[in-house]
Length: 355
Image (cartoon, rainbow, N blue to C red; front, side, top):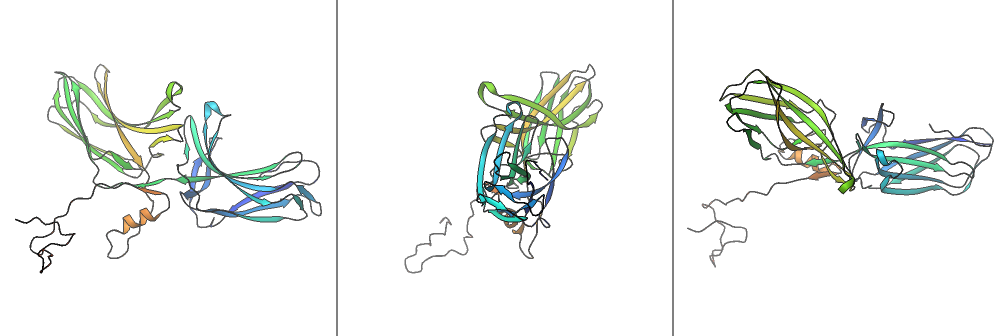
């Protein structure tokens, strides 16, 4: 609750959102490093509610020069805190200049608000959405802010291409690794295998790690920082030629954000699978492979007798970006051609080849 004291009357400001009892709440890290509860929204959803102005002193006049509410989407780079970029800035005037003699409530609505990016709290940059109420006064304005969390949903086809690579050192080590795909949703499981084709060095153990790389800025002012999100030891001991090591890595237990590309021309977030082998002399051999992480709709409901219900529901949620693979070419059955008995010509949608 925001309070600023001036001469004479003062007031408290409260912001209440519509459907707070049913809207999902997400825990997110604030500037103070603590976790806070914030309401979840998607791209295209309306943001509505009420602003309550409660007077501090009964029977005292409260003068103001106007009351407004703003919906703001903002990117802030930590090493340049005085230069925030507002990629969304919408304003609604709630009251004209005047006096309040009792508590007042003002409804507001921002209809079908575009929210192109996901909320992100990174090492060197943050992207936030928030509502700000300002009561304009002659000496000191009263303000109140609340943060909202926005999730950007995507949808990819299931027939994603697998990753196959061969790496090694000439005449010493030759391995082949395979991952089942290169795009994973945040609740997915990374499945793969490591094949040892040639082993002439003494390997002590092998591990796989998920690396997150945050890239801020552009050109000569680019700042890049990587952190290890997760690390697993997948083999302990020396492998032999022809041996196969399975990989199964669950993503659901980690605090991950989707991959992001040139968000607001300010920053990007990339993820890599880092395979590391350590020999008995503690020398490290590694290979990185970039993967794409994306956010999938949380709940899936199936209608009886509908195999496409999952896809229909996910793409109907506001803000879902759907990526589709090229449709396969279907060949009609030759035993049932649709032809014009008079002219002998086939209908436009009959693609069967004549033999």
